Structure formats: C-alpha cells, structure tokens
Length: 258
Ligand code: PEP
Image (cartoon, rainbow, N blue to C red):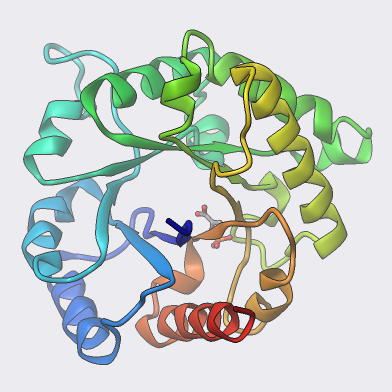
C-alpha cells in the first residue's frame, strides 16, 4: 500500500472549545475527500474530548501535543497516555522545540515520552531540530543525529517503523523564516540515514515531516523535495482556509505526479 502524505496541525496554546467547533464545522464542510493525505489535528489538551466528537465520521486523526511517562500520581500539569487514549487520541507530538527550549525538556525526557507513547499504542511524532547557533557552527547534522540517538534509546526497530519524525529547525518555527529546499533536503536525507543506522534496517518508508513556517504560499516548493513525507504546521493551521489550501495543493500535486 502506498504511504500517505502526513499533514499535522499543531494548534499549540490556541483555540477555545467554541473556536474548535466553528473551525471544524467550516473545515469539514469544505474538505473531506483527502485520499492522498493523512491529516492529524493536535489541539490543546482542553479541546481533546470535544475534538474527538467533532472528528467522528471524518478521515482526520486526533493528536496531542505531549504526554507524560508515568501512569498517574502527583504530577501537576501533566497528562498520561491513558488519559489521551480515553479521548481517542492516536498520535502525540513529542520533543517539540517549544517544549525543549521554553520548558527545559531534555533528550532523555523525550526518550521516556517516546517509550511511553509506543508502549501505550500511541504513535509518537518525534520532533528534532537545530538552533540557529548550531546551524551557524555547522553542527546541524550532528545535533540531529544525537537527538535521534538519545530520543530512540531502547526503542526497537519494529517500534521505529510505527513512528513519525519531524525535522523542525528551531529558527524556522513561528518566525516566517522557512528553511531553504536544499537545507531541508540535506537534513531529511541525513535523518533517514541516522534512523536506518539506529534501527539497523531499512527506513525508506518511515515518514519524515518538515516543520517551520509552512504556509499556502510556500508549500508548492516544499512538495518537490524528495524525502519530505509531510508537514507539521503551527501558525498556518490555525486558519481553516489557509490549512485547506495547503492540503488541497498537496492532494493536487500528488495526483498530478502519479
Ligand atoms: C510547529 O509548531 O511545529 C511549527 C512548525 O510552527 P509554525 O508552522 O508556526 O512555524
């Protein structure tokens, strides 16, 4: 079976329940047929339950923006895998750069979250990416490799096959400054090589998404990059028209190139 193109919406700390309902009503009226893509909505925790109902009878999947590795207990502000599963969540973002840089999440913590997601049957979307300083010091590929090595510690090859990865240069997230096609291509090839080495097996079918200021104006350029299997989209996914345009351009491009 042919792999789908993944388009994940990271709504970050945005949208009340009313705004989620309005968005999804509008969205599902305009777009339901998406044979080539797998669209995943990652709303804030407060909206997961509402989104579960809004996504029923649609082809779209529900993702969360994080999870904690313990099952329950005195962990104020955290959320467990079981809680996410009870809202019909299937995917979970792990290691987002905002978690790493604003909230001090380390690669070791990211690894625990990946392991917990996998053992609970959730699909982790593991985010990795370099800062601008690391890029300027020519450390990008080494940083990515290290984030993968620690993030995937004790994860089996079979489990890696179930995962999704997202290359998100920190300097391109929410800045309007997208990485160039050459930078993206270089990073994605290198990430695939690293994953192949870590799992000691073929990683050709593992989805590697690009994230960082993707929008309806630049998506056509990104679609042509080999080894980009989808997008993780923040700002541009908050506006339904903008997000629909990205999905439609993707669907058209894939259909035309078949
Ligand atoms: C993100 O939140 O993962 C992201 C890529 O954000 P933006 O699209 O706004 O850069």
